[in-house]
Image 1 (tube, rainbow, N blue to C red):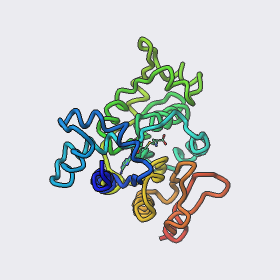
Image 2 (image 1 turned 135 degrees about the vertical axis):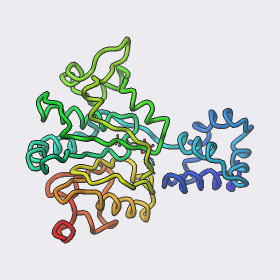
Image 3 (image 1 turned 180 degrees about the horizontal axis):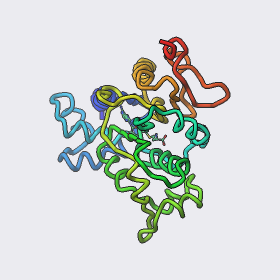
Image 4 (image 1 turned 45 degrees about the vertical axis):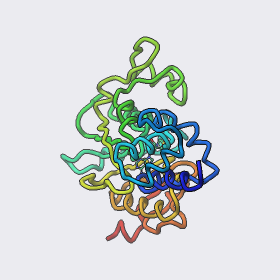
Amino acid sequence: MTNDDFAAIAGVVRRRSGIVLTSDKAYLLETRLGPVLTKFALVSLAALGQRLRHQTEEALERSVVEALTTHESSFFRDGKPFDHLARNLPRLLASRTPGKPLRIWSAACSTGQEPYSIAMLVADAVAGRMDSRVEILATDISAEILQKARQGVFTQFEVQRGLPIRSLVKYFRQDGTKWKILPEIASLVRFEERNLLKDFSGVGQFEGIFCRNVLIYFDAATKACVLEALARRLAPNGVLYLGGAETVLGLTEKLVPVQGERGAYAVAAQRAAA
Ligand SMILES: C[S@@+](CC[C@H](N)C(=O)[O-])C[C@H]1O[C@@H](n2cnc3c(N)ncnc32)[C@H](O)[C@@H]1O
């Protein structure tokens, strides 16, 4: 594979998803693109690079991006944002406008552990009175990963990562060697394919937005654009949760850290007052 081939592949990934692949990530191409080469009858990464340079093919480009996105996730990942949401849910539920649901968005939801963790907190907060007061929107750029997320089926290894045994017993049923989330928890979550670079239409406003461990893959300009778009979707009393290695600082003034809460951000005062 030449530098031009690498640039053609990385260029497609960046244009479609915002993810920046630097040349030290060339090994990722070697390890992850094998199935794409087979599927599209390409003999090598060089052949793939050449084809991407010379024609735009939706299905091929989509497969390349799917293969090169990282879908690592776990239940209640990093703990703190979920603790913060759990503490705030009673207040948010009490202060919602009558007739309007409380809305929470998991904006790069991967295999579903994040939105299902939120749904379990909601179920705890409403103490079993499951009604339509809370909507959880879970979105991701990857159609394949959303298919897995919608199934709500997790391996023993996956449920052992971060899920308290109490929640496993309460909110899952065993299905052979796997665990399936209960339908009443799953029904709180609506999955949709959306790209953070462009698909914000009709998404509405949210009291909570989880956008975690995805901005790290973007360049500064893309991070700033996405953060400003998210700030516009945050209700005045809403909170944006970012991943442990992510921040708004130096990227936008529309969001400010929530005092004493690592990874939590609120709309800046002038916007909230506006
Ligand atoms: C590392 S996972 C993070 C999952 C979860 N938020 C967490 O913290 O555990 C990153 C996810 O971001 C998604 N992603 C990457 N680029 C995206 C984009 N432009 N729009 C929406 N999702 C994107 C990937 O498909 C992947 O599922």
